[in-house]
Image (cartoon, rainbow, N blue to C red):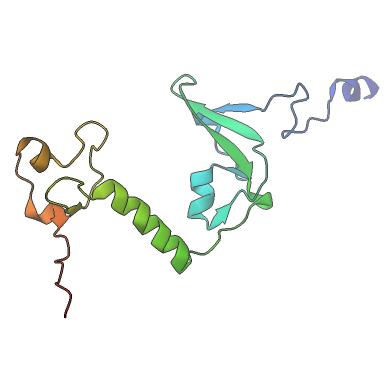
Length: 142
């Protein structure tokens, strides 16, 4: 029995010892104590400043994600009215046509390539169900 204990090594799965993080392939990802950011979000959690402890890879390493320990995760911060307003302003900048129509679409516009919506750029008619009309400007009362 003395010789058998010499072969055993105490391994910490969170510290490979060489400064790198352990890498799991897609089929090896069934660990219940680790989760990606998206999985944490689905659980109502966030990493909370914790460093990733491993990496999961698929497609031969072309796609990968960090893995975080679930026991170190903290609850997500709630959405406030100020955050919601800031996100709406950011999306409005990406969805509103700077061209002549000024419509806010329900999708992001190709502003870098076309500079406006397709209707303003080349005359392709837009589906009326894909945008909202800009608010009408009312004249100031004298």
